[in-house]
Length: 125
Image (tube, rainbow, N blue to C red; front, side, top):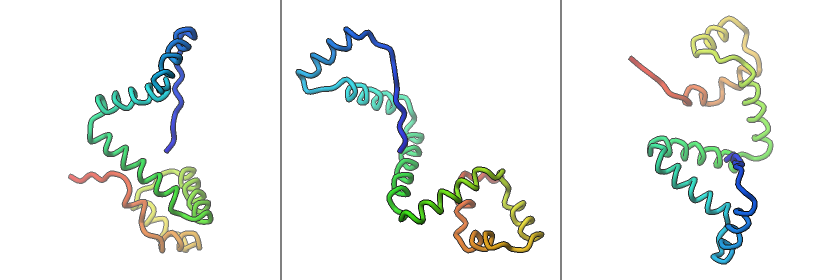
């Protein structure tokens, strides 16, 4: 999971006093702010959106832990090459595959499960 560091201006003397009294209660400013942000997030972000984000975070953390080092570099290479290429529809990919002779790269993609098709949202009328 990636994180973002927040920076806010706050008077130094007030921060020193806050830290002094929080230390007496075994608390930290950072933890108190983290708790406040989490409560605000839960209060303002709709439950279905929070559920979606949590599932994405779990999926990302499981992908980071699961593949061995060789597969990670290979999947990163595949992802990087996909990001550089413009998005094409399934029909465009099928037409291009029918027109061009199969390359070793295309054969390996055809053998792999169609992850690209399974991801994302679909809409029907």
